[in-house]
Length: 265
Image 1 (cartoon, one colour):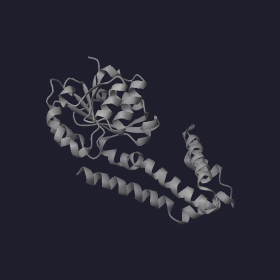
Image 2 (cartoon, rainbow, N blue to C red):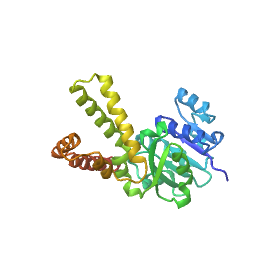
Image 3 (cartoon, rainbow, N blue to C red):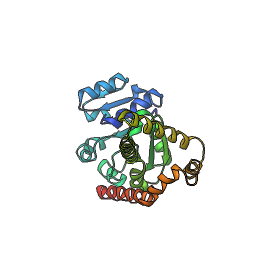
Image 4 (tube, helix red, strand yellow):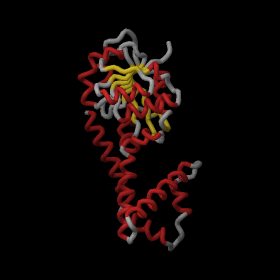
């Protein structure tokens, strides 16, 4: 049977994934039905060539269902989604809800695959961690991998690591934005106009990111290559070291992971 997909919720992440996947021909938009109460979002889905509906019953015959609603909405929609004529693979991007909980709400006949994308998926530059969940076999993740590969890179992890994924890459773009914000402010304090500071910082970030992504060179080796003993870079890095930057990152990721576990309990 050819894969078909029902998308429950067409917000920022759901729409980004489907736009990327249909553009890359990872799935035929005519085999995608989007269930969304908002008329403007349904129009956006229709423009991609997808079938649209407000009624959860329209998802009944799909072989796969992408759950891209807010976690607090899941309990409300689960009874309607679980009543299905055949085994279905549910792909969840809902943070904090374990696959065991999802399967109990939907029924043991079904399988759950969990995915944790991040916001750069919106521009095709994301990374998504995929985990086999309750009732899922290896092949059940195939469609999920195709969908998310269309909007960035994909890695497989154990489900127990998804809170750590959230802390590392799910929340990660915010860490970069905070660094950029602080860096731009520091450059303005040196006397630059805001626009110039922004250009200098953002293009430095983009260039450094491309160097990190080019080949298998470790970040430490790249750092050492640009750091001359007794030079300006060494002076700056010494301040970061003295202010405990590494400890701050370790503690920040640990706090995010811990909060993820709390939200899921």
